[in-house]
Length: 95
Image 1 (cartoon, rainbow, N blue to C red):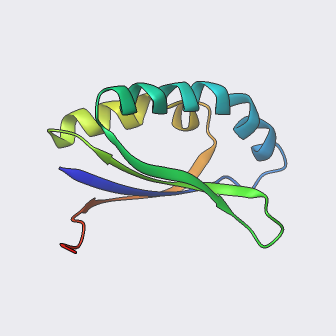
Image 2 (cartoon, rainbow, N blue to C red; image 1 turned 90 degrees about the vertical axis):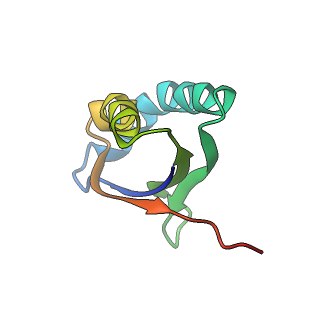
Image 3 (cartoon, rainbow, N blue to C red; image 1 turned 180 degrees about the vertical axis):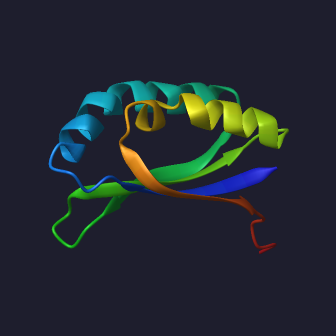
């Protein structure tokens, strides 16, 4: 099943520093997802000034439990980068 994740960063003064500190480990995790055919699409959400304010990902897992296990261990979650997260199942349009 595919999932779309919209995750906005925390708004405190240290949030950008936490994002940059966690980013290398987060991206390594994305490489692992891709190698396991679990990464569909993703990237940073930007504000009008081009600064990263969150993330959007489409991932694919066999079960909700496996998706939740990955999510709970993502560096952006563990290191409190993301604060407002919405996860929904996702079905691509048949075009």
